[in-house]
Length: 628
Ligand code: ACM
Image (tube, rainbow, N blue to C red; front, side, top):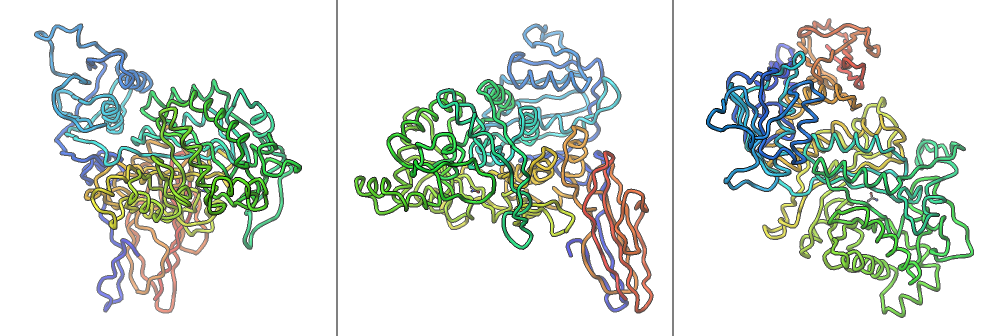
């Protein structure tokens, strides 16, 4: 019932109230304090008027070869704005005009927070100050403010922005094991992460259903491990499970050359790529390729074809460690990331419990049980990674049986693991499914949502997640280094569906990671800033879940008179509606002014709405029953 106020029930009138926000960006910027920027900056002071970018505008830079500046040059070229940028050192300062100038300034004496920037826009010009990532993020903010005109012209509203992130770690994960996504798509994914100032791409490269990264020393990992004979159709379990497979071979992997390409592409956008080699569970693809790494060498193993947790996985023998260390060495050669993710989740321990070899290791190493064996396994892997001056990240199961020294914990099974790890003095990345951080979860209760693994993570739940648990004291809270959302792809086979599940929730998560808690405001985000951002994403060719119309709700209301005020959830989109109970489509009535309803006594009018964007994307429908 958000946005619906029941007024004057005595005369049986219910009004649907809505602040008449604007669908045009300039107006939207008037109604929100953040100039439409996502994630909302630390401080914004809106000015009057606008800076006009023209073909005569001079773009001055003091660090022409810096990667952030190169990124901006490329943006300007693509946007058809300035054709050249001028190196400050070539300009006669005395004769320099300060009008019609965009100045990107990396040399300044002010103290600036890590990744921070300052952006000043007035009628005469723009000055952006920041170092490295800060300059890059300032550029991202500036790009969000540029309203393109015809060729060579653009309008940028005046204002001042002071900004820096709340957390140093702002991550987005993608599972490419369950389904594979090509290099072009990974770049597109990285592009949208960069737009919203995320700085870590967690690349889930290996799992039961596929090994997706070339390892030269162990070629069968991809020759065998990247291919599965078929894939589960529909849900794995529950009342709608089909029990069927598609009988279609599936595969794909990244060559080392492609990995370098991605790592460099991401680095140019201040995004670190964290590879995940999921160990010791989730290794069916690995033992299908090298059965000698399993606990029962007499068995043959197949790359996983269904979802869920498998009984079989690698055996913690010296032979396995030797192979894994060599695999990890190649991985560390490819990925300069300070963090290397070693998985650790959902290890069933079934194969270990059946194994005499494991019982012998448990006895020899004086471990308590299989949990102790997992802890021993993770510690050995962690030590190896740390010996190469890297830090390990593991899912929160790595806490069980004792946490490896220096390990960073990703808290996914709620926040308990994260809290415990922070209390032990370990750094923590919060990514709880219960906090709306699992983007494979469904985004609404509508039956029109596509097939998903289940769970429920609507946009407001993701937005309102607070990553720092109040039970931690100040010192422990510092160990929460950031947030991440995860996108597992069992039920996501296409780029379009990845984008549908990612957007717009990723923008909400990005704001959680960047914006100070006290200025986070869901209504301002969803109603005043998101419509413009979604139009930008539409223009850039991204798919996304179109939110239902602002003001539209699934509800039943009692009364004789209703006024319904709606607004498209995407700038430039239209709201279509029916009042006869049928499902609306793009050929139905278009909302253009508040709808007035008088409901005869004993009757019900059913208002159904959808939003249709200019590119034809459609929201799920809403149903409001008005009964008298
Ligand atoms: C996980 O979702 N298994 C980390």
